[in-house]
Amino acid sequence: MQRIQSGDQVEVTTGKDRGKRGQVMRVIKADRSVVVDGINIVKRHQRPMPPMQPGGIIEMPAPLAESNVMVVCPHCDQATRVGYRILDDGSKGRLCKQCEEIIGQD
Image (cartoon, rainbow, N blue to C red; front, side, top):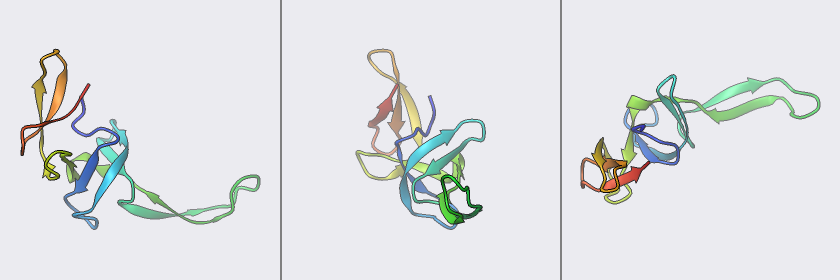
């Protein structure tokens, strides 16, 4: 089970977007990085592709290191570290270290 999963609300802890919150669009396990909607926007110069796209400058979110974001607990609305707990049905659930509530389970 990953500490951060796609669909989680996260807060950026370092860098130019420090303090901003956004939703995780995808997790890149090989690089231990995440792409957050509306955070770490970079500009990419695109050549025109004749049948489909015009050229120009495209803005898109770039990946952030997993260590530079913290999960926001839906219960206490605070950026928190994530712990784990084995639930009654035997599955493993993510635990908010601030309020001791279960964040999600798989």
